[in-house]
Image (cartoon, rainbow, N blue to C red; front, side):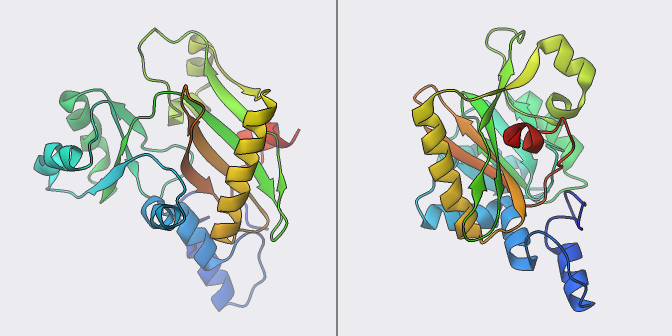
Length: 239
């Protein structure tokens, strides 16, 4: 039973080792895991299948000076989101409201992650949903992230602290609640089922989305082997 998360655990690395040793394992295989975890490869697949994602580009170390040009070429404006292309648990996810914030946060990432992904910030909230099965996946109930005490105008997005720092969550009133709008629930499930099948995932997975004020859905990332601990998002989605 594969209970490893993030790099090496759900990106095809441990799966390839287990297959070479002919050891059976749970969850998705090598190709599906690596495709799901790599935010650039998966988005190429999504674009081909007309699945909406935030606009983005890759930024390589020592090419930081190209940031403005790349943003202009992609029609992306501040604030932006920067993050590793294949990390889990929201590690290394930062919102940058201007160039100064970008430089500060990019310096935290550039020595460990190269390239990074630079993504437009979608004004809205995060949605998570659990999915189980293979060819006929069973969908959990979508849950939505809320920031009840955040200052007005502050960008709301899931970061490592948002997910795992209990004191931070309590301070800002961060919690997840069930999505209640029937039409929205239907659209989320339909949207995510299509992606699950396109990625050829199996076992179980958790998908992370953004939804804006117009209720447009943007696919953020697939987690092919998420945590299933009692209070984690996957478990909340299937309760």
